[in-house]
Length: 123
Image (cartoon, rainbow, N blue to C red; front, side, top):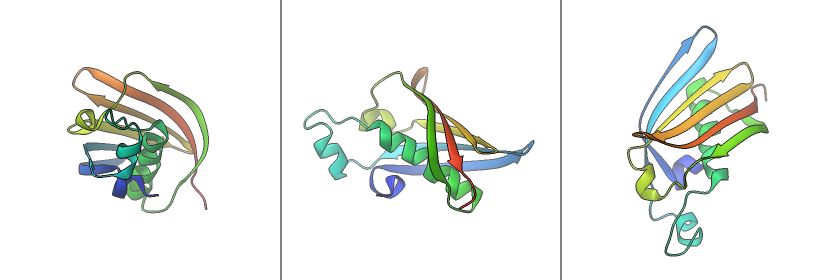
């Protein structure tokens, strides 16, 4: 499944290479018609954490211009549930430095998730 096609939509994205690191910032929107939201959870949709991780990998892959693959989840903290309403207008900020990716999902003053991942950058 491609998270950025089926669950989360990127409204705007910008990236830059700075000091050998790739930095990405994206504004998001939810794809409310996704079957994932219908089943997770019926009547109270919540964005699955694994989908949030997948979106980070996909967004960094797009910015890098080549596929990246998740090798390891080093540390992930889900600080607030992220409903489709919360995704609309939220920001995903991610950095790839070597094979280490860090990412944060925020909207206003709310931090939804922070993660540190190891990505396979050479496929």
